[in-house]
Each structure stands twice: as structure tokens, then as C-alpha cells.
Image (cartoon, rainbow, N blue to C red; front, side, top):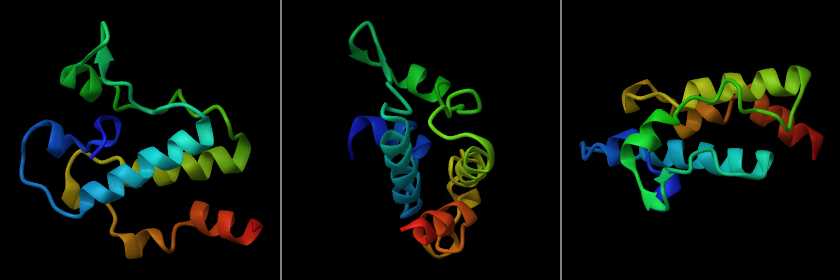
Length: 107
């Protein structure tokens, strides 16, 4: 798994399951929409797990969207970016997410 997309349970060396993929997909969506990484996880050019964990807040970082789109994106990320994997949605749950459905309808 690429360093920038690691879920908290990977960083902390805990047991993990398919919910790490949900976390990783969310960070990739962010990268595509915002044009930059959600987490840099580096300090002085070196991988820094403590910094990576500290960066896991996104309330002030969503700049590419405004209004209802931004609100729906943040709702989606609040659902996905949960510290505890059991609190994260499944892929099936995300299939019904309003932000993702809105993106599909725009196509």
C-alpha cells in the first residue's frame, strides 16, 4: 500500500481488513479532486508516522468544491475517515452515498 494512503490501523501495526481499502479510495478521491495529497506523512524529508496521524483532519482543507458539493464531500469523508475500521462504511454503503451518486448523475 502506498505510504500516503495507509489507514490508521496499518500505521499503528494493528489487525486490518478490507476497510483499509475504503480509507485508501477516499484518500485517492481527495487527491484527484484537490490536486494534492491529503496526507504528506513526511517531516524533514523522512516518513513520519506521528505526523501522518496528526494530519488526519480535513475540515479546513477542502478547497476545490464549494456550496452543496463541498458539504456533500465533507459528509462522505466524515463517514469514511474514521479511526476505527468498524465505524467505516462498506463499499455497498458507499454505493448509496449522495456525493457519489451526484457525481454519477453529472456524467
